[in-house]
Image (cartoon, rainbow, N blue to C red; front, top):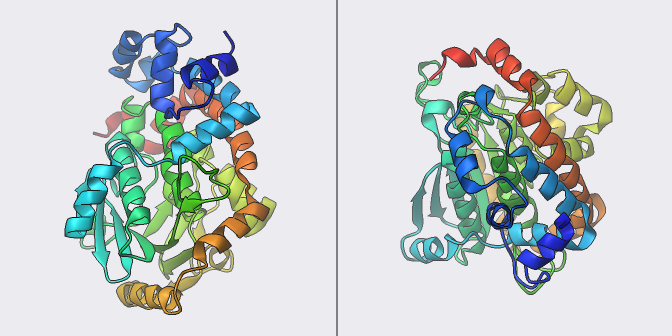
Length: 374
């Protein structure tokens, strides 16, 4: 059975929504993908010892995303609230605070303050942070007592950055090398968490193009935004940056595709600088001319708290009634859902090949000293 036909069967002809991970689990039960026990056994191995069983999921998801009807339906499914969001939203409504793996959410005046947390690994993203961050984004967007959202990195443990906040170091390369990050992590992240930052939380009975729960997002970049954290900035409405902070997208050096950055970065800096950043490791200083194409306001890191407060007040002072409508209008010209769907079809297939490539292992050992990290 081809992927489109199987998708229709598993979703009752697209009358119910199924998330990517559950979709692959159900497809495995039908014999279309490797069985759960084989995947579980391979998951325990370091990346260099894996056979690449998950590559089959890459082809399966790529075929679904390439189909306009099925692919749009899957994108819609991943924009719906996470299954655990309702309980956490009720808790946040009562307390104004949530502690989740990888994330802290607090209500501060008109803002939902979302702090990314993985202090041992410079706030890097991995399996331990993905679900908590997506739920936190859902709750921040669905909270009726706040008007805007602020995204910031937490203080980290590394002695080099003692007492400092860092926006984030991208994917956890140590865990990647150790085989602790599955291929589906990329798809769940970019179809879910990151796309919700860009498009909001979808409603079941309305196209995400027409209606969604969304707010303006402010990012506060301190230290650096590397890899995946730089990708996140491309989905944000207003970026503040410390004048000593920098941005990089070292995906070629790592051996993977940097999420939707290939699609979104050219809108900010053009094709040539995009190629330099993704293919040639260009480091972008936030205070540089190129950096200011990506960052709206550059301030001293000691002024970041004050600048966040002033920006929240500026963006909410006259109300935010038109924010969602203006975001949708901008997306209509820049990145309609169908364009994103087609991009993700390519991404799903190519990232599966990259994730299990011997070149990725070599790059991690050469450029990250991954074999000697814990």
